[in-house]
Image (cartoon, rainbow, N blue to C red; front, side, top):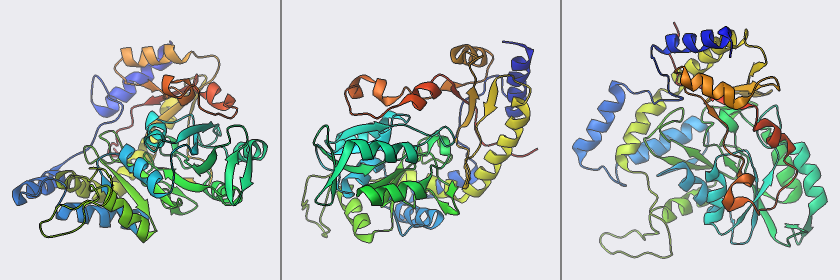
Length: 384
């Protein structure tokens, strides 16, 4: 690697004031301490308490949906989102192979089968045009439902994921879902605060899922949420994430097999404080984008990935696209050796042992991008 890469690494460390810069850290101050301390003082620190209710209400208002149901992590949120959307055992669920394994795992928890599709280079998310052509070839409608002609299984849902916080072409995907009678379930784990055509991601699907893991743009420590405009689905999601316990002053009556997924009150207290800061976090992320544009410009063979058309991105993880003159692992080794934590994109799901035999479309774009993408430090920083 040449001197320009060394200058890049030194400028990043100087910007953060650290000898080693992590990929993404949470940002806390007195507000988080105030809310969490108050929660502890109430004694209500587990799955019941005022902060859980407040967090759900504040989150729904922030995203622009009617309801939010807070749960223990993003995977749990996606699992329940799929379940309440009607995904059943032996169904197929369309999703990009370029995503974190949680997307496929949540489908598997339902007894369903991931069906992998390709992405578009301009969004890093599901390519609607390629998907439309593919479904025309391999599927058919039977009594108002879509079936895979090759496997004879029902294809129930489409799960687009907003990669690194960048919105996919949601209106185009809504058209495809209507055409093929699919349910749109958004994996918005990474895209809180991202907008597509003036509407926030997580509000387009029949039901959606968000993650508040410690490395996300805001965090509850561990946590997630289910989002929907459907009141009945929200009520059912809340019921089955709290062990399907029938409300009663003292009796323990449960009306179905369910899940202990409720977000603890103490985590919700942290989330309330973090959510108040989201506008500032996004402002700082976008300022960081401008800084990286300047730093990346002298690097040959490197492009900073920018928000797609018609979108306003939270820039959760800043992303470099390398051309064929650079070897991805050489760049990763250099940056990590010089104190700038960097990572490759996730191993495409169709290459992982549990999912190698799943149905798939042509994945040539993913195969190509897998060798070219790296993420660089993305913790929000104050301007100046």
